[in-house]
Amino acid sequence: LTRCGLFVPLDKAKHPEKPGFDAAPNFSAWQAAGAQALVVGRVSREGARLKAEFRLWDITAGQQAVGQQYFTDPNAWRRVGHLISDAVFSKVTGEKGFFDTRIVYVDESGPKERRKKRLAIIDQDGANFKALSTADDMALTPRFSPSSQEIAYMSFSGNSEPRVYVVDINGGKREAVGNFPGMSFSPRFSPDGNSIVMSLQQGGNSNLYVMDLNSRQTRRLTNTAAIDTGPSFSPDGRQIVFESDRGGGQQVYVMGADGSGQRRISFGEGRYGTPVWSPRGDYIAFTKQRGGGFAIGIMKPDGSGERILTEGYHNEGPTWAPNGRYLMYFSDPGGQGGPKLTMVDITGRVKVPVPTPGYASDPAWSPLLGETQ
Image (cartoon, rainbow, N blue to C red; front, side):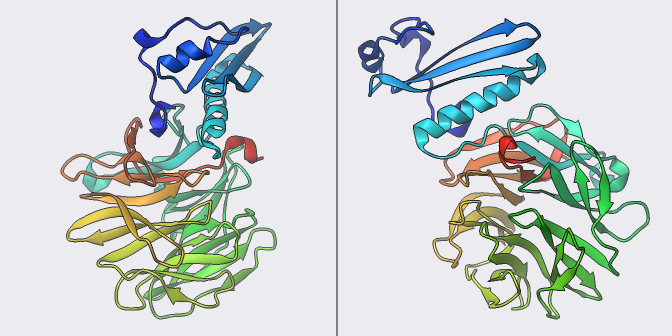
């Protein structure tokens, strides 16, 4: 809860009592101490299972706000902590939580000139690292399915052309999405998880295509001599935001999901790329390059209200939390170091590092685990 920037723990020295679990706290004493909410809990064994309970007390209202209990395998204790955090966050803020989620990203190792890149997955706070591919595959731009435990990504597998693959996180099954002439890259799922929009490069330019994952039928969406890439669906599936240099410089465009009504929405100074639509539909995040630096920002879907959240030597690749109120991106300080992951809220005031075992880039945030199959 502290990581999200909205909760400030009360100094333990100011606690007026040690609250029990079964009895209501002394509301007036806690209010006098400056507390607005109080969480109490207990953990016990029930045979081979772990039983975790908690209560959230609303100090101002003088009543219980929510209370739940969980039975789980003892090895899943961290996930129970995330579920409790989500319940508290949702009740206090009125918005969906984001703690019970995972991040898939590119785990980088080796010297900068010969960097090896493989897929890896962690909890949103950096715990439970697991490699999903070998360094020989050279994985890039992983993206979570919104409806299943699948990831789409681009890979240089062996000596073949770069291809878009879909891999099942739990089963490990991997398959290529089509066998196209030229390079396929920048995949992203539709909101229902039934389609993938991606770039196909043929010759010197690339255009956007959408593929139905059930029928494997492909439809072309753009047809220009420019480089169109980085597509991302709106949460209702009706529109797609993408980047293109068709106007002479890299900018952000929006079109209908069928390719109609293509229009530019970014007009600020610099080059815009890696656009991604918020799950709430209210903002589009982007990377902006100007003056030798990189910035992560957000704008409204019509291009208005542009706001920079963070700037640095190399910041890139924003991805949204499922509640649309936090972003994760990777930043590289330059020199002999490497990229790291950081979480930032949409105000830009909350900025929290995400620990990883090695260098990390191209993060993609999962939906809440309870909302996928």
